[in-house]
Image (tube, rainbow, N blue to C red; front, side, top):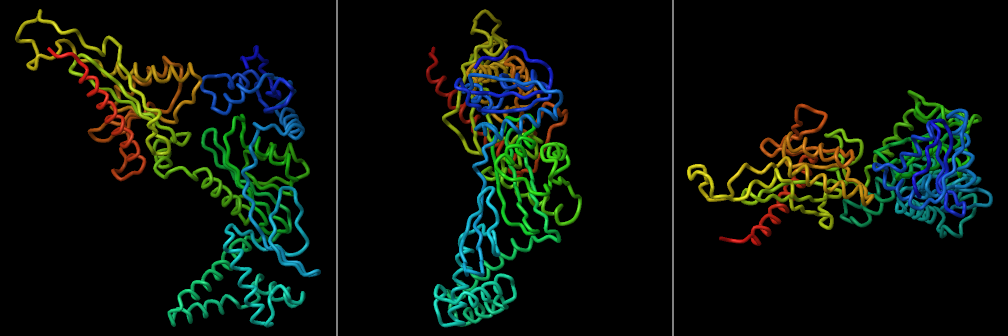
Length: 517
C-alpha cells in the first residue's frame, strides 16, 4: 500500500488490514504519525515491509492517552487475533506423567494453552521422551518384581502406592539402582549397567524439574525476555499450586514499538491470566493496566526472583540457538544491537595503475553465501588514474612503462562500490545486512560512511586493517584489538580473506581481457 497522508502527532491505535477487512496487525503508539510512518521508511525491518505490501487499508483511532491506547489495542487483538502481531505457534510444551488413584490411571499427557490441571498428581515436565519412557519401564519392572504380575494387570491401590513412593522419593530405589549398576559393571555386564544408568538419569531429570517448588500455593506466570534488534525470545514458566507445571518458549521477529508489552497482550489473548505475574520492572505498568485483578511483581530475591533469572537465561539461549558462537562473540565484541548474521565485506583492487575494480562477498551465520557475491567495475574518475601518455620527461616515466599519472584513489573506489550496493538495495526495497566489513583502515571506513549517507542508509560497519588486525569503528577514535584466537576476529578475517580472494580473481579475469601492445 502507499504511504498514508500525514497522521496526527497523538496517541492512538492503528490497524493494517486487507481489502476485505481482515485485520493483519494491530499496534499502539504514543505518536501515530511517527510510528506509522516508520513502516514506510527505507530502514523498516523485512517483516514490516511484508506487512505493508500485503495490507490495503489502514485505520487509526485516536485516544486520550497511551494507557487508553494500550487497553484498546488489547481489546482489538483479542477480537481479531491478527496474524502479524505475534506468532505464538512456536511454544514448546512438554509431556507429563499423570497419576490418578480412583480409578487408577497412570498415563502420559500433554498440556495445552488454557487447559485446566487434571485431577491427580502430575510429574514432570519431561524435556526428553527417553527419560519418560525409561521411568515407565522402571516402574513396570519394579512392580513385576514385587507382585510377579505384569504392570497392566495390577490392582489399583497396589500399583498407585508403588508409583507414588518412587516418584515422590519415598522409595529408596535410587540407592538400589546405583548398587545394581555397580554390580553389573563388576561382572562386565555393561549392557545391564547402562540400562540402570538410564533409569537413574530419568529419575534425576524428573527430580530437577520437581525441585523447583515454592512455599506459596499461588498460581504464577514467570516471564523472561531476551531481545536482539527486531528478534524477541520469551520463556514462560507456568507455576501452579507452587510447583512449576509447564514451560513455553517463543522466538519471533517483531515490528512492535514495545515488543515486550505486545507479547503480554497477545499471550493473554489465548491464555487465562494467573493470580500473579512475575516480570521485570519495565513491563509492570502495562501488566497492571491490562490485568488489574492479577498481582504483578518484580522480586529482587527469593525463589520467584531465581525463577525469573532462570527464565531470562533460557530466553537468551533460545535467542542464540542456531546462531554460531563466532557470530555471538562478534556481536559482543563490537557491542552491536543485532547479531551480525548477515555480513557483507568489500575490497578494492587496482589493475596496472589505470583500472580499478571492487568486490563484495556475503556471509550468513559465519558461512559464505556465494549466490550473493557481487563485483563492480569502478567508474569514479579519481579511481581510474590518467590515460597513458608519451608527452612526459623520460626521467618521470615509471620503469615498467605502466600507466603514467596519479595513483588511483582507493577511497573513491570504495565509496562508489559501497554506494552502488546499498543504493540498489534501497531502490529494490531489499533488506540490509547486519554488518558491513571494509578491508582497510580509517580512510576506507570514512569512504563507506560517506557512501551510506549518500544512499540514505544506516548500517553497522567496521574496517579491518591487516597489519595489526585492528578493527576500526565509526564511533571510536582508537581501534579495537581482539585476541588472535577470538572467534569474532576469526570470522572477520574469513570475510576479509574471502573478499580479497574474490576481487583478485576478478582482477585477473579483467587483466586477461586487456589489449597488449
